[in-house]
Image (tube, rainbow, N blue to C red):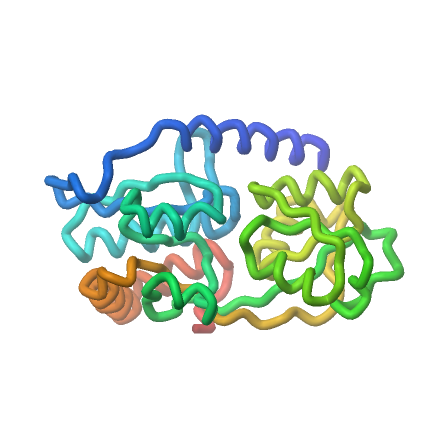
Length: 255
């Protein structure tokens, strides 16, 4: 059953590559009030693909924001570490991809209000009895997605980090014993385990709390930042945010 799940992951990676290659028009040429939203759709339950469709919490939330702004949402898929460069070069208008609003990133982009609080956790194979916390990662081979705080934290604790463009590649490497642990967002790990990963893997240790997930605009577009903040406030007030949160995370909002 678990091998079938990994096979499905492989098909998802292929689908993402195909969809990414499609491309979209530049925001500077928008004449139909389109909001071009950049994300890495390989990060369930925030964003992932089902067939040819993008689904997930960020997908639903960013579409609801676009509706509040009176704009047509258009999702553009790309690697996570390419999101900020794409925003700065004008390929996209908004990043909505489970991104932590870290001080380092704030130097390059404007962040909206945070709309999700999470943490980073360690996932190991079930037969692993040597890794119990981040302190145990020194000199251990760890998988993490490229450009993420998960990779940064693994390096800070002395791990030998293998970075991958797609988050799901980490699970494949862990399954094939080419890495000994994966560091990833806690909610992403829990979603993966609940989808069948718990047959082979488990989480260990206490998570490291994140800076808070937010959407990002360019430094020059403070007007859009303010509009997205206002839309988020309205979506929280009218119950839409709570409905989407419960749909994808299974609980009432904690933030």
